[in-house]
Image (cartoon, rainbow, N blue to C red):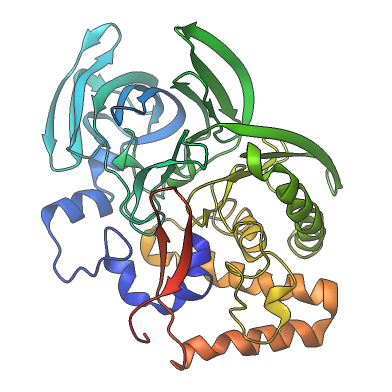
Amino acid sequence: MKYFAAIFFAIASPFFATAQLMQVKETFTRADSLRGNLTPARTCYDINYYHLDVKLDVSKRFISGSNLFSFTATQDFQLLQFDLFDNLKVEKVEYNGQSLSFKREFNAVFVTFPSVIRKGSRENFTVFYSGYPTVAKNAPWDGGIMFSKDENGKSWVVTACQGVGASIWWPNKDHQADEVDSMLISVTVPPGLQDVSNGRLRKVSDVGKGWKKYDWFVSNPINNYCVALNIGDYTHWSDVYQGEKGPLTLDYWVLKANREKAQKQFGENVKPMLKAFEHWFGPYPFYEDGYKLVETPHLGMEHQSAVAYGNKFRNGYMGRDLSETGWGLKWDFIIVHESGHEWFGNNITSKDLADMWIHESFTNYSESLFIESLYGKQAGQEYVNGTRGSIQNDRPIIGTYNVNKEGSGDMYYKGGTS
């Protein structure tokens, strides 16, 4: 969601305290504590690997499937916590061929093992679940799963859950302090649609009646909110960037009708961005998983190795210059800013939501460095000075992305200043 943060997140500090980032929250509950605190039931295990295997019935807006947790015990324990929003049903938790007892408290699930799990041991359990996931009201600020249609009436379904948490749609240890080391994302989708998720596509399987399963493998550590589904009628093309660590694969997935303008916009922005950021910050952090841009019906998100893009192939921020200097219209804000988060937010991740400014501050700075690399130091400084107008409260800063029934939309400002 970091484009929101590019200017907005770092300034609109009251939203750090919200479950959904655009909803002001003034009181805190037991449910908030269960999600935010690192209790012994969470710190007792270190996540090593997930296999998320889900089927999305788009017409019914129904999700079902499982997630395998592979972990290493950091201490002796018998009780652990994982997280899943309580509108989704935990059907069973399976360990060594037997069902474990569990209890739910709000969006937390507590599992009891039949005997003590010893420190240093590596174990697995699988959570089976199903239900009607939260529908995003205003993705990506008000998160969940976004169900929309493309201009041809085909389903276009994506996830965006930063702030509210990944457990809004899949079971996991939902805290930024523990990133899984690697994971397999398996997504089964209806006929005529594709899924694009993080990492590299390993296999596409026909599972009958036109339904297909897409297996994506992520070989690098990834934070939960970056795990993404992007389901639509996509077209795909590839390129290669000769980067600091050698050839970096570039993969682009957009709606078929947008291929020509996407090829132009991505071609003009992606490689200059990579050149600038590798110069300033070192090699792109995820060569093993590649770099992808995936068109989405919302504005964008820094989903690791599968950056969500909804800037409508325009320069600036939905055609606007956030700095009001002219420099912001010479490049595509979403491509540059969201990709900057591959270094700051994805590669370097804060351990707690309260420290998300780390992601935003450095990525904001990356914008001016990108401008400086193309147009000189003076241009970069002018851009920084221009964006300060929002901090000085002379411009509205709180953004909302308004999506119409066709799945398209525009950014508009609402409210006063912050």
